[in-house]
Every structure is written in C-alpha cells, then in structure tokens.
Image (cartoon, rainbow over all chains, first blue to last red):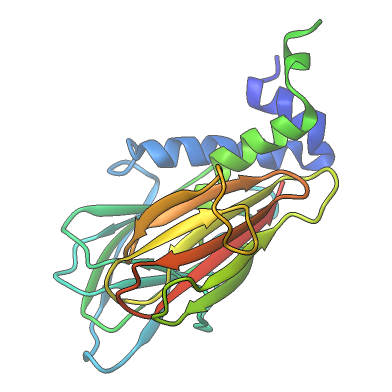
Length: 133
Length: 125
C-alpha cells in the first residue's frame, strides 16, 4: 500500500517520486525536532577561532545516490553568528543563524550529494546528529 | 471522483514545496539582494517563469545588522496591493514562499535603519 505522500508524489514527480517522499518525511520529522537526542550518527564539532578569522567547516554530507539525510545542528556556543551554506566557498548568499542561545537547533534536509558547511568567526560548539531516510 | 482528484497536480507540487522547502534553505539556486539604507528601495527576489512548476523560495537575512521593516509583495514596482506582507526582518529570520507559475516576489524596504542584504534560495518542484 502506498503512503499518502508517495501516492501524491507519483502523480507529479515520476521517477523521482520516492526521493520526494523521503524528502517529505525527513522535512516533517526534522521540523518537529523530536528526534534530536536520538538521531543516528552524533558528533560534536568544536571550532576554535580568533574573532578576526573566518573559518568554514563541513557539518555534514550526503554521499548516497538515492537517500535523504536529515541533519540536526544544536548550537551550544556562547556568542556569535553561524553562516550555513552548501559549499566551502563562502558567498553572499548564505543562511545566517543569529546569535544563539544554548540549545538552539537548526534542521536541514540534504538531497543526495549535498554538503552542508558552517562558517563562523567565533568559538563554536555544535552537536550534529543525522538520520538517513 | 477519487479523493486525490480534489487537488490539481500544481497543488500537489505546492504541497511538497511548502513542506520540504523550509528545510532546504542553504541549497538550490541562490542569489542575494543588497539594499542601501534608503526607504522605498525595491528589489525583485524571485520569479516563477515556468508554466507548470512551483517555486519554493526561502528568504533570509544575510548580514548582521539591526532589524528593518520590509514589505513582501507581488508588485514589481512598489505599488501597494492587497498582497502586501509587512514584516520586521532581523538576522536569523527566515521567510518561506511558494510561487505558482507566473508569480513574482519583490521586497521593498520601509523604515530602514541600516543597509541590508537578503539571501534567496530557490528550488523548483
């Protein structure tokens, strides 16, 4: 029996229907953030940098050919902004997370071959969790 | 009539775009728009030139300045319209839109405190 999401995806996305069904489920679960403490692979990322130095670090990548990666990034830093982008090359078109409070969680859904990078000029502590859909 | 016939294919695409789009902020086609600290400045952020696709648009603030008041509108020239969506946009705020074929999204700054840069991510569904 088809899931409702796949049933609808089949109507419009053709061969990519399964991918969009996975994106749909990952996005919904990620938005609810109720998997944050449990999500599969967990690691802690420490970025120590001087205030005048911008550093870009890879947060996650999705090397699969047909799976979707749900990524939770929990920010436990004391101050500063985080600039999230899809590559190491920092441009003007990035997603900024403002000065954060402990426990702020950002969620991202990565298609196959996507990468997620973060840039910061402040000492940063991120806890990263990811699950494959 | 089957239950799923109640919605068009375009609406199905909009449904997926609305659910998935906000989680895809750093990805897709990306551009930016710079605004000087001059009230009234208007910029076209996104346009859905397709005939049968839906465009998911994520707008975020890409600088680190103070909050500004802006108007999201479908009008390209700043004319007031019933579609105006007035918001205060600060660093870290994120606004998501789903555009049907032929629709355009512009933003006009009002009550500008500081220069501002918006980043725009777009993906087609």
